[in-house]
Image (tube, rainbow, N blue to C red; front, side):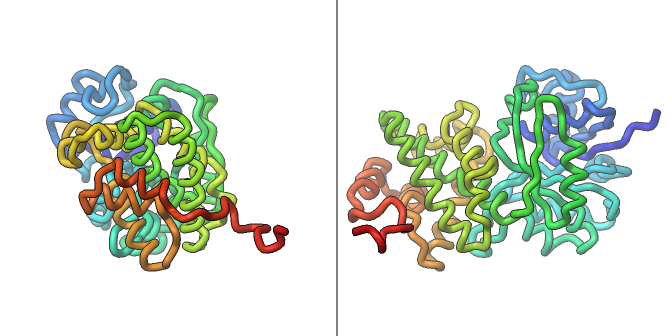
Length: 343
């Protein structure tokens, strides 16, 4: 029997977990690792010991450091690279995939200065016929749990409905449920901006604060995410869904969250440099905080948590001062709706 081939670009925890998931449905999976030694280690031990330790990979999953070999004859392409590497990775695809190839993007983030979401980078880089085959996968889905078949729900969005439903059918499992949502901007912005709030929750924990503080950050964080999202053309209801509130909650409360762990280290007094070295993986919230801060300044949108997070990361503000700034803001209403008619 000829197995369909899946190419996964990115040998981190999420790329590896999705490769394992797709191998369950008679797919031959090949994962591209930049470093030959990582590819060799994955193949030798049937395990990604660096990024997804303790998860045995099926024989149908192989790693390779030759991107041309990985892309050759792939019917599905999963892109699971950091947002800072997305543009460079997409440029490597020229002439190597066809309009029949389904592209599943898992990269989350917001590009500083240009404010491009991942799908916009795809649109600017790929031919139109390839872009129409791209879907975005988001939602509360830590790789460490997906790889252990812990029940998970996610959402897929795309400009093309048929393409979104094709990806939904491909990924759906008994313990991996996939919804679709036409709001591409909302799905992407929720998945990106929640990392800023997760980082802030980590700082609060590192400072020794409790559940009250984190609950405040999550709820007020969701409010400012929604404000920016609606201004950017998203449907406000999307932020109450899997890629909004769902992803926000899991990232702000889980030991698996790199952004949360990074924030904890900052709250305990580590420098950004030392905290990053200790995490040892990409912390998307740093780059996204820079972009979101620039954007809210440009559009004059109130995003106090994002602003204080940016100042801690880029201007040397201490975490304790950031908390004082947030708690000392002028009094205001929780929601604006109905205030004018309130007697």
